[in-house]
Length: 429
Image (cartoon, rainbow, N blue to C red; front, side, top):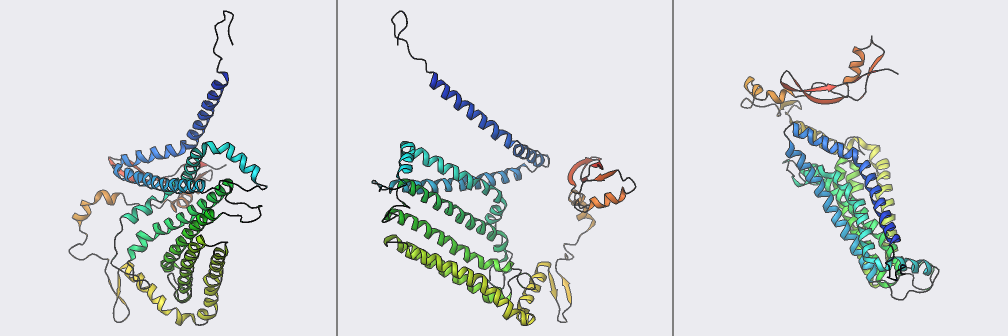
């Protein structure tokens, strides 16, 4: 193309500019939507900072923030690596020659579109699912801090002979971690199977082997990891029996110890056997071993893990519940006494309350004066129950009402910081 003088002119990059413009507009709209959605969270984040800063506890605010951010980053990084590695393996073991079949047209279009950008596609998928699975873990910051700063109580539970500190500080985070790992590997298994299907390693409507040997090995490994995680889950479910409410009192009951606990131990063995069968399946043809493992696990879970303890409770324990549960009721009573610091004399009467301070540590006027700031901030009004009291006091002014949920804040009154209950008086509609 040339102008009137004969000098060639450069074509105007109209299309390129328009694509760039559309991309910028789309990115700006997406950023605006994210900002609008995040405004409430940003406001709460900044308000928390102002609150802790006003009390001189900025270090506490930073500690919570670092725990949340650190926890989310670790889980996001682990999830990203987990997805990326499995998608990379799925691409590397994809068959070079895909058999013709009904799915070939769809698979060919996928490879024509994604093939040149396979690396970028892996990063995008791994990034998306890592954010989906990792960001929410920040909400477990308190469990993580307790887990990291475990303290022993010096008292062990009578069933498993573990310090009570394990149940308070460690078990909640361990249970969360196991459940999260199981969910993450379930999603990885589904996405990996989809990747193998798109790569031609899995064929649904093709005669012959529908799954190639490398793909079967890859999926068997993922299934074995899931079975191993489930075995760990059952292992820690044993300790959760101490929180059971099946019996007449809270804690491990006769059925939990004599029926549920053996069932859980059997499920642990079944899960480990499933791991072994799935590993062996890597070198075997077909899916007989995985089907046997999953079927056996499902049967034992339903029949032995659920039905058997219910029958045991109904026909063995309940006819003579008082005698069978006596030992476990005694455990509950003893734990209650230990928790409240109560000791019992030979006559069976409570003779000492060990939580009452001795003479050396007795409360005196000087001790109270030294802790005046703390005592002045002790909450005397419960916001959950004070609203009906306010309503009763205002019974003669029926046109006004108070909210059911009241707020608590600190204000400077006569030069001192006081905790107050805030109630907004409203006109009845």
